Length: 255
Image 1 (cartoon, rainbow, N blue to C red):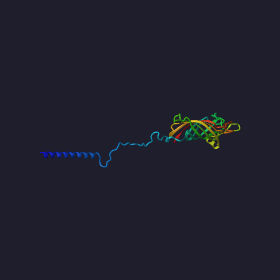
Image 2: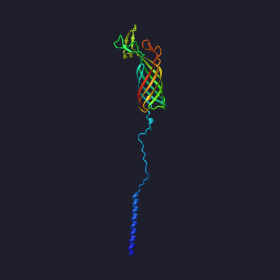
Image 3: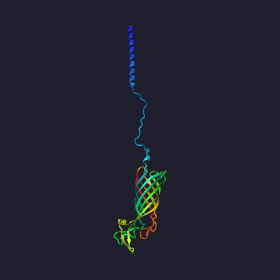
Image 4: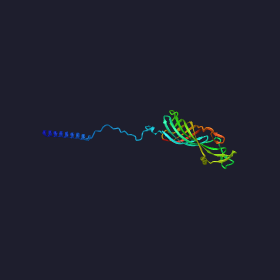
């Protein structure tokens, strides 16, 4: 009986040892597969935006040049033209523009004459046109204290003006109307003079500095001497200069 009991104890102890070793080996195999690396610390994923963040590339969207149309008004009436402007560094920019306008005495009014069945200007002898081509320099003022959408400037420039004179009416020896020239016919008898001058002015650009549409307002005073004896629009009232104030509205695009 003692031998059997001792034998049962030996077998029980051996079986318990085998079960313990099997459980330990199975745990190690489940915890790590051969050739597999142990997991490390949590990773950090960094995303790079496709579109630049706000303000990162803002300078590249700022316009450096532009062009457009001008609508002008003066004592002689309306005028049309165009312009080109570009940055010159810092608060400076330069511009070239041109416009076509009529020029007349302030007291020219059409009325029905005795010799014509249509309205004419009494005493008028010539139609006078002015085509100034202007080169100017602009200086932006109050750059640090005003918003970007309101950019006032002062400007100074030089002009070369083509003064075109066409006949309107001829008179006989008794100062009576002799012949009337219609508008298009008169250009066949036109004479042209080139006169030099200059101007000063103030203005402001409105809107964003970024690329796109823009508009501005300006006031410029031109000094364009013609010289003696001048040119007659009305009889006995020659014009010896083409000085004048022009108000301009500019609409265009910046890029």
